[in-house]
Length: 434
Image (cartoon, rainbow, N blue to C red; front, side, top):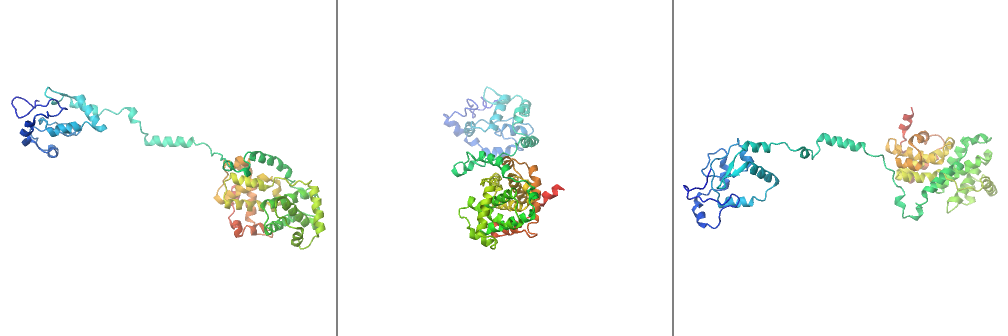
């Protein structure tokens, strides 16, 4: 098909398709001005309408072929507007660039620059060619995404062990450099601080019930004097260690308790209660001379050894490992103070008592068994090792408000201790036992 020839002198042949109209011939523009139509009119009326003579199909090649694969056999010569459009079309998007590449592959031009399509079906085959596998698999399919998620879930490592001392690295009072060695030493020394769990068998005038009454009363005295928490634990340790080595008559048992709290205050407290205060709280059952004489006897029997690892030392460390809040801390101390009253709990070492109290408190707060790997690492106790002691603590919690020995319950039922004793016990730990 020839668009410019001798029989049509009003049409001037362009030099090439991409080059556009020769701009030097101003007369041509004037002669062809009356033949121009608006491009939007051509595009709107082209599909489904009768072909306009000498009109170039300016629709995209792909869109034109989609209309039943037909092309307009009649072409209009390239005008100045079309030449400008061709020049501006050099900046194409990737889709248009691909269409242009395919158009070049299946088309050729004649000597006058007209497009002559030689193989339309070949062009369609090229466009319908399946995408290479490397391009098809650039994005994972939904089922592959699910498989990837499953693999990722399977590859998740166990719960990491938290560095609980990193936050105190700049605190010289935390002695981070020595803390591990210190607690390793405490674990060795707690064996020497423990007493036989059956030492009451050698006592002929007192029994475990009297011991429970004494300690319950001392917990109340400790609270009234507003003493430090570690003072209470050391007091109970001094009483048990002395009774395990020395027989005591029933009348002197309260005196042993008074002297034990006096010695603990001298070791732990800044302000120590005077002997006269101890006489008053005992309702003047003992004289000053009797108190001082019992003090001399106790320190000699214990060989002045007051530096023993009590459950309080392990409580502070294990609570830090558990990343506890105030609620968990109070509940843990409530449970372990209930255990101090019970003679049967002497069979457990102080570190196990502390770990079991925290484990039971966590289970009570969360409503399910909870013992992190960090707590297990720093306490050296697994969940199974704590269950026996923990279940006994749950029983003490259930009976804390009943009976005559309710000093711990009353102490933790105040606003000072956040009404901790009103918290529900972890009953499900007992159910798991059955």
